[in-house]
Image: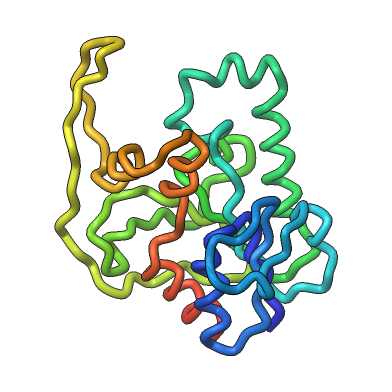
Length: 206
């Protein structure tokens, strides 16, 4: 199959499809951060949607749409950033590709478009983390959990701006500590969990 993995610089999903001998390419405006630039299209993904792909798995940026950023929505609606990314999502879902999966955290597209077909957790796929992840699917089946792990880690901390105790997933907090810039933090947090990537490749190409 000829597969486009949209908005992916990590190549985590692309490589899993390649392991199964599919003609998969990641695509992002950023260079790939893995070992196979020959499998990466560094270009605007919207200009690649009509290249006769059999399947697309997309990971559009969620900064302006995710519910975790709801406190900034009024400003983003006013300056047009939110509508810009709503349009980007809709261009993906309406792409001339038979099989489509769009992955993102819980966000406003559940009301702007429709509810996701499925909400998965990394802990359903071997990884000891909790992160609600939505999948909007077109002619693809829901993912079947491969191994449910009941342990996941959280860290409590105090937001000194409002002096309120908050609770975040350890993976999220680790990214904050490791990264040197906001952009680097965002990339670390958004990388696909390896066992979810493996499940996508194995279950969507049967």
